[in-house]
Structure formats: C-alpha cells, structure tokens
Image (cartoon, rainbow, N blue to C red; front, side, top):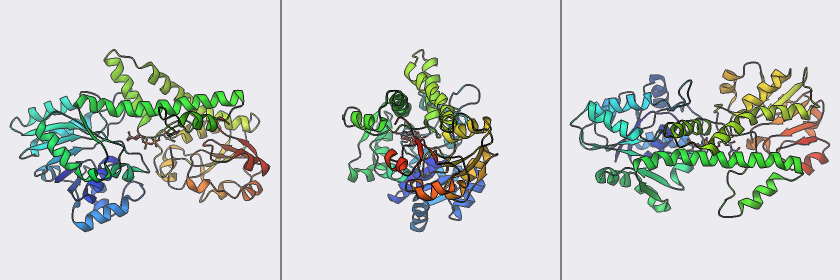
Length: 433
Ligand code: UGA
C-alpha cells in the first residue's frame, strides 16, 4: 500500500517508520524544510528509543522517504494520514484544529483516485465530519472516505506500542475506506492485535476517554498515596493489593509527582471543553485536572518539608527533568513546578537528566545543569529524584551520602526501598510510603 503521513512529528514519524517496516511504501511529509533535510540526512529530530535504526532500515529498504511536497506525496496514496499537532488553544483549552483543517484542504486538492483520509491527530468528536466537509468543498469530485484512527503510543515505548498494540481503533462506515484500513493494518494480524471498527465519532471519543481514564487512575492512586502517608500505609502495597484484581489491573497505579507530558494534560482539558459544549459535564475529569495541577507544586513543598521547612540559601540536587523516562520531552513535566517551587522558596538547583537538559534549559533557565548524576550532589542539602530513569535506580548510596552535605533523599517516584536507604543513614521521603 502507498501511504502518506502529513506531519513528521512524533506520531507521524513513528507510525510512518513502523508502516514502512511492515513493507508499506511510506512518505512522511512536513512543512518544516529543516526537519525534512535532517530526516533525509538520517538525523532524527526527536528522541525515541529504536527510531533511528527503524528509520535507517526503511530508507535503506527503499520504502520510507521524506518530502516537503505535500501535493506530490499524496497524489497516488491509498491512504493519507493526518498526523499534525493539535495543541491546546491559547486561552480556552480547546484543541486547536487549524493545522488539521489546513492539511485537509491541501490534501483535498491533490488526491487522485479513491483515497482514504485518516485522522491520526487527537481531535475532538465531530472533527472527522468537518474534515469531510472541507474536502468535499475544496474538491467536489474527489473520491474519498474520512476515517478516524487514534494513536495510543507512549513516548519512550512507541515502536513497541505500534507494532504490538493492545488494540487498533478504526472509526468510519464507508465500506471501501474500511477495506483499505484493514489492508493497512493486516501486518498486525500475526500478533493477533484486535483491530476494532466503530463509528467515527466513537473512535474520536475513545481516544479522549482512554487518556482521561488513565489520567484518572494515576490521580486516584496519587490521592490514595496522600492518605497512606497520613494513616501509615504503603501505597505500593495498596496498589498491588487492588491491581491484582483483574477488573482494576495493576498498570498506571504508580504514585508519583503527578502526570505530565504532551497528552494527558492537553487531552483532559480538551475533553472538558467538549463536555461543556455538549452539556455533559465530566465532574470526575474536572477533579482529576484540578488535583493534578495542585500536586506538582505540592511535591516541591514536600522537598521543603524534608529539609525542615526552609530551603532559603540551600542547594537541591535534582535527578530527572523530563515528564517520564526515555524521552527528552519537558512538556508539563512535574519537574518544572517542583523546581520553580523550590526556587521561589530561595533554593539553588543543580540538575541532571540523561536526555532532557536541552529542552529543560528552555523552560528552566536559572538551573545549573550537570554532566552526570553524581556531579549534582557535592555539598547539596538534599537529593530529589523526580523522573525514574533507569540510570538513577542503582545509585551508589555510599557515594551519594559522602557527596551530599546532609543525607536527605526525596524519592518522588518510589524507586528505592526505604529500609535499604535508611540503613545507609539517609533521611528518606517518598510518595505514599
Ligand atoms: C499517553 C498514553 O499512555 C498513550 O496511550 C497515548 O497514546 C499518549 O498519551 C497520547 O495521547 O499520545 P505518554 O503521554 O507518552 O502516553 O506517557 P504515559 O506513559 O502515559 O505517562 C504519562 C504521565 O503519567 C507521565 O508523567 C508519567 O510519569 C505519569 N504516570 C504514568 C504516573 O505518574 N503513574 C503511572 O502509573 C503511569
């Protein structure tokens, strides 16, 4: 099959490279000429484990290419995927659909023969209808179907999520369009991943409902963690205790500093807007958003508390800046609020992150960035782990203690066993334990 990806950002690039690896002929298109020339030169503009090798393999096999020429790229495609950004619109939290609509207009004018227009961008319910209208208006003779095919990729694990998905959701009711989509996803049949078909609106809402539910699960366990701290229970035990119930499931029950990233914060807000517009308030998700927002600064206060309530003039060593490991993404990272809370209270910050420091330096200017974990520590008054990178899981605790001015460890991801850390003489605080 001939596929075109409009937008070579995170979703477009990962999906395009994976489709090419399955043997489809894929061209990834982007408006940004710099991005295209980087990709043509074999450089990957984002950090995602395994993506560089996958892209190189696709290029070498001759079925993955990059182009700035949208019209030429979509002309003969069987399916054109719209995978452009849908950021929160400034001021009201609505998803900004201008890139999606602009892409639809351009695609409409260039397609020939029957083409499936696949919406992969995260878009509010009803966007597919609007895209269909736009294409019909721009090119009344076009033969096309618009389907929704939301993505469920996690940053850092995106290739595996793409190739071995829990499910693929396809929304639409045009038989010819659905037949093309079945063919596009046929390579997944071997792995028996369910490919489920539903209405287009159902698929659009599935994406938001899925992310909102996961955000709710995290926020639920975070609040249970707070209660654990008050009553002397351990949230990891409680999470395991409930997670083994198949109806609940053990995933996404890790208590921590709150969810961040490019998806949950933006998608929960967009769902609330859709809910308001349709007079179906989502009180639970409203609470999730509010609780999570407050939590990030509360984690900063937790560090202040661990340091006796006053951090003025003190130095805090911070490990992990990205919103989660295996990414360089700083968007809505809890580390931002934690660090700003500490700085507001007068602390100096030294920090290290394996991949995120370049992005971090754009949002957190007044931080001393270090070359490795240990160089954050000399004479610091506390060590705070904000993101659970593997590299922080087996720190040499004796060395850490020798380097710090005082042995205070705040573990916001619960990666250390309390007894081991305390046996080394640390004052240890974690989340919900
Ligand atoms: C999320 C979803 O997991 C994907 O399925 C979805 O496709 C994607 O959004 C999207 O909409 O594009 P992602 O944002 O990459 O993926 O990251 P997650 O692994 O879901 O983590 C999100 C946040 O929740 C992180 O800050 C993470 O640290 C936090 N989290 C996650 C917890 O605090 N506890 C957990 O148990 C799990």
